[in-house]
Image (cartoon, rainbow, N blue to C red):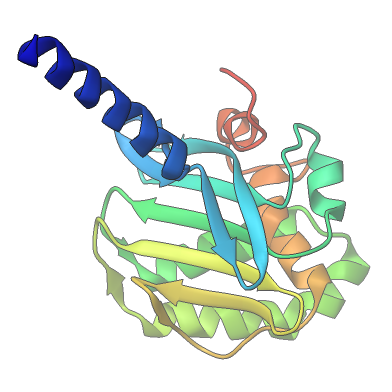
Length: 195
């Protein structure tokens, strides 16, 4: 009888823990990201996740939005706070990472957009280049906070100044979600599509 009561209590405790702890994780290739998070006053959900794997696995990443969407254009038009969360799988030189992001922005921007974004792309590139080598396991986060702009944090510490303009954050998202994304299956993963 005691054993049955103990088992029933353990089962109840496990169910209660799930009910009162809604923060679960999504996993991609062994890397875990929270299902939900709070950014400023907004609650965000993990829209999708994937692995950047050109020339071997480079990083795992997840995209957080106010509401899920599997449409890239709708994601790019989404208002409110957003987050790109990256966990490095391999060490990366800041200069290499800055070049890749700058190239991704340019590949997905019109000439007019490139001109409008040029100084802000340069600002981000200078910040990332100045970091030198970023070690495997590092957390790189690009947040969009409407009252501030794009905020870059590495391992929880802000790097560089805020970068103004929602157009800049949309251009940053296009590196992974644009018409010429860095990797098609990563784009599908971030949009919550299988395969």
